[in-house]
Image (cartoon, rainbow, N blue to C red; front, side, top):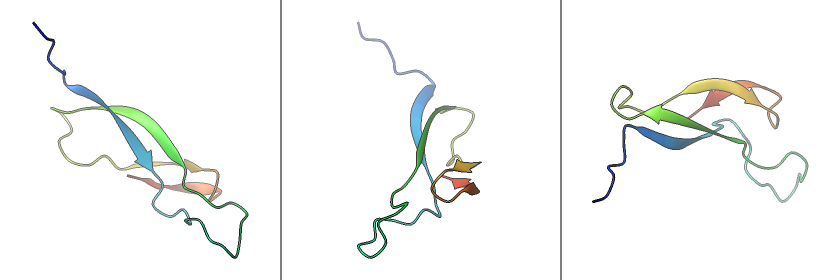
Length: 63
């Protein structure tokens, strides 16, 4: 028999305010991501955390 998936899942948090790749300015282009876990039963909606983004050089919201 197979195991059930469980309540905890791995999610990727992505910076909202990062600038995507731009052809004109090639410095600091990209999106920064964190990986974390969340409990599917306790937190049913989207997870939004303030973390440090090295591209933005500030603390921003990660979704």
